[in-house]
Amino acid sequence: MNPDIHNFLENIKIKLGAKTLKRIEENNSSGLISAAVLIPIAYIEGELVVLFTKRTGFVKNHQSQVSFPGGKIEIEDINPLSASLRETQEEIGILADEIEVLGRLEPQKTTTGFYVYPFIGFIHNLDRIQVNPSEVEKIIFIPLKWLQDSSNSHYELYQGKSTTQHSVLFYSLYEGEIVWGITASLIYEFILIIK
Image (cartoon, rainbow, N blue to C red):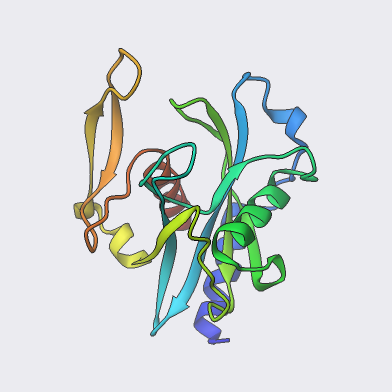
């Protein structure tokens, strides 16, 4: 591995801290559906990128939206991290042993009824990516530097299914796709931590 990348990953681990991976019951007393996502980072053609998935129109929630691999925590999942790794394998074919978990962000509530546990992971080998066509339309790689550029993001008022408008983070169009909502908030929080 490139020594600069190795140092960057070690620095991320330090900045994220050694947070305990708590059991689901210990954190989610909100009555919301527990879910977990992986924010995957990779190194492609000399730069760090974040991997996003565009969901198909066939999935139950968040159809055709840009998101991270992840989903509902199932009863057989040991903890939220295992759920995020299982979902990543189901959606894009990357096995848990090909992902170096760097840490996690604080769980976040969504306006769509989920309590999301976000984890950060570095994918060492992208050769085995295999998109599950029933869940993922395509994979999108966005350079980390582009996401870190504040001119590429803004807030808009959004109403959604509720009657209340609230401010939501949107990233600019990138190769025809928009990252917004909880996905944008999670990547923004990650960027603030690694500055």
